[in-house]
Amino acid sequence: MPSPAVLFAGLIFGVIGIAAFTYGRKNALWRPMGVGLALIAFPYFVSETWLLYAIGLALCGALYIWRD
Image 1 (spheres, rainbow, N blue to C red):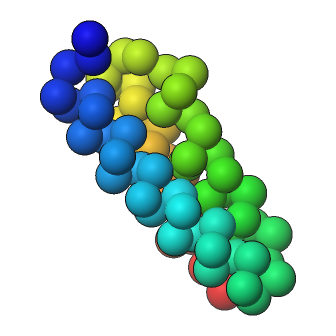
Image 2 (tube, helix red, strand yellow; image 1 turned 180 degrees about the vertical axis):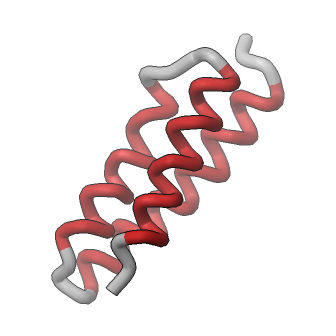
């Protein structure tokens, strides 16, 4: 059973990913769609808590940097 920190990170980054993907799809922008898909999918493949937060924050930073 994963720790509460891993479950919380998966939930938060998944919600941010769904929002980014929906925004990108409605505006026909491929960058937010790609980063959104990555935010949705990566918690399934990463089990280390510190790595989960590091990748999630890096992808959220990419959303911020690549905003249009």
